[in-house]
Structures are given as structure tokens and as C-alpha cells.
Length: 490
Image (tube, rainbow, N blue to C red; front, top):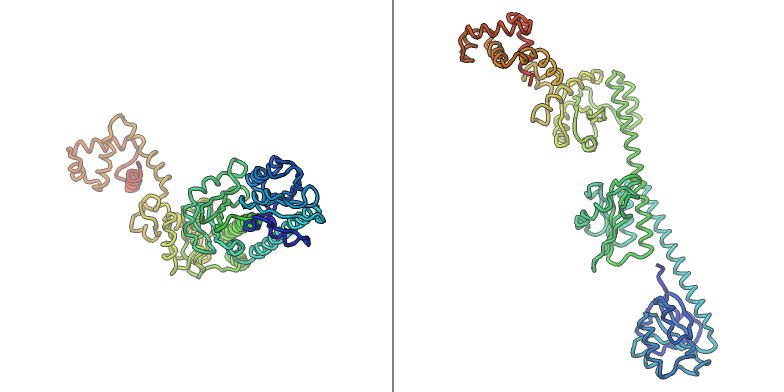
């Protein structure tokens, strides 16, 4: 709503001899329109805020007080009484009633047409409308220039706080503060419960914004994002938002949405390029990969590299890697592949550990990254079987050959090889007897003692195992396969 001119402005601007006879303390009442009426009760045709003009044709001393009372109850801004037609002067009863009610009473001389007052008020309102549009347009221009700065969304938030003389905060999808400007806005945490109302997709029942008010503060919260909510921004001021302020807030919301969507598109394109560079590097086309990185203003890390395979929150991993200026990262399938200088690998792994499981290969040269990735993936598979967040390929040698096997393949091998023993009636003791026999390296007495059976019983069982499996238990190769199957099977 446009800021209306005050009654004081109307009285001063008219080059007419208007005299204020009552209600001097209320001359700052806004005049939203002018209503001319000779009715004894014009209030059914009023909305409030009007300057009522009358010649008092139906007024006299007997009905002056009720008339004024009705106008005050309707919250009109003032009463203009034209003299020289129905009355040579304003009836004393009207003056007295207006004074008692605090209603501004203006004497309008006969040579001042009511239309002149109406025209003046209309011109003042139009001027206010133009001024309001001009202020909003200028503010939008300043916000747009801020959006073009390198800081992007942060610059818009800074400018918005300045335009409104309050605070402004940019929030991510989870409600965490990404940037704040203006006076202390740490209390925005109280807005978090309200954000859930804005999380629905546009057009599915979610409000376009939220307005929260207290005696000391007025706050507006808007969601950001074209197709889905990607964040929020909130602004707070001490006074109620004016129409200009609402226009500025809406303009800021549009610019912030554009900045966020454009930023995400740019980021997605950059990540696709990085993934392509990784494919070049893994294919041994190191120089081609370096050329593409040069176009991005980056380079391949040092000559001796450690490849990290990370399985977890890809967004968090990539954001964390971005904090290291000498580390390359790209997504591949469901993991992130990171190339770090040998001396930086441990620090990078420690920073990424909270976002997922990590496998580290041994240091390799730029032309041997495929080997490094294979090692990292083996280490990552081992990390998935244990409780450690970070596993190094170099440490797997101390864990034995079994740690290098693919869990799925090993499980399938074990299931197929040992199936005849598991299916042999209820003789589950064949498996345990085989395990003890292999653990004791084929020594009958030691194995029988471990099982608590006679050695002849064990010999019988082993002959049955050999028959069921079709394997020679004296063959070292057969023993090795059976040990792997017993160790990796479930």
C-alpha cells in the first residue's frame, strides 16, 4: 500500500485559505482519499482514512455530535467543512464535538472548490506512488549489481541488509547459516522449525514465504530454488515492512535463486569435466588430462601420487577436497577418487574420514594411476569389512592374502566348493574336522586331540571329505583352496 500524504501536508500545500479549527494534534493522520458527502451518515460509503468534505446541509446543533461521533468511529482522517453555502460559518456544535473527539476540523472557504482539494490529494498520492516505484527500482538495480560481484549470493545478502537497515541471512537446505549480514543474526536458529513449512515443492501447498512479527522485530523468510528448495533466506527489521521493502525482498529472492541455480549448473558442469579428466588419466593419457586441467586453471598434483577411493557423502567429500589447493578429485560411479601428493595423503584422508570410508593406494607415478586406483579400491573393500574408516593398501600385506580377495567372489567360491559337505545329511562335524586337520597341517594326532576324537575317527572323516569333494587332501594346492574356502565362507 502506498504511503498516503498527511492532513498537515494537504493543508500546507493548498494555496487556499484553509483554517484548522480543531484536532490540531491529529494533523499527521494519513489521507488515503477524499470523500464528498452531504449525507447525515456517510459512513456506510467510507473505508477509513478519508478526508470527508461537506457543506453541512443536513447538520445543525442537534445532530452535530452524533455526526462527528460516527466519523470518528469510522476512523476518517479529518472533516473539511465548506462555508458560504448552507452555513456562513461552521456551527459551534460541530466545532465543539470535533474538539472533544480530537477530529481535525478544517474550514474550507466558499471560493475553494472541493474538487481542488480532491485533485491535490490525488496528485500527492500519485507522487508517492512514483517515488515508491523509483525507490524500489533503484534498490533492485543495486541488488542486481551486487549479484554480479564475485561473491554472488553473499554480496546480495550484504546489500539487502543495507537496503532494509536490518539483518539478512542466507541458509542452506538444512537451515545452517551460510552467510549473515547486518546486526547479530545468531538468533535465526529460532526460525528452523518454521522452515519445514517451506520445504514442499512449489505449487504443492507450500507458502511462498513466511512472515513473523514481534513487538520488537518483523521477519520474512523465503525458500530458494527453481524446481525444489535448495536453501532459504531471512530478513529482519525493527519496523513493519513497507511496500518498497517487500519489493526489495522479492527481488533479492529472485536474484538469490538465480545465483544458486546458476552456481549448481556451473558446479555440475565442472564435475563432469573432472570426471572426464579422471578417465583420461586412468587410461594412461596423462598429457591430455594435463591439458584439460590447464584450461580449468589447475594442474596435476606432484610426481608421486597417492590415490584415495572414498565411499560416502560425495558432496561433503568434494567440498572438503576443495579446501586443499594441490589435490584433484572427481566422482566415478558411487565413489570419489582423489589424487593427492604423497606427503599430503594422510592429511587429506584424515579430513575426509568423517564423510565416508577411505582406501589408500601406494605412491605411484602419474602414468600408473590405474594401479594406484586398483590398490585403493582393494583397500576400500577391506575398510568396508572392518571398523576402520581409513585403510592403506600397504597395510593389507600384514593381514594376509585373504584381505586382498574380493568378498563377493570369495563367498561364492566357498559356497560352491564346500556345498557337498554342507549338504551331507547332518554331518556338520565334517567341516569342523576338515578345519582342524588343515590348521594342524595334516598331523592326525594334533588334529584329533583338538577335536577330542580318536585319530581313527578323524581318518574316517577325512576319507569321507575327500570322497565328497573329489579332492586329494595330500595335495598342497587342494589344501590351500580348502583353507581359503573355510576362512572366507559364512
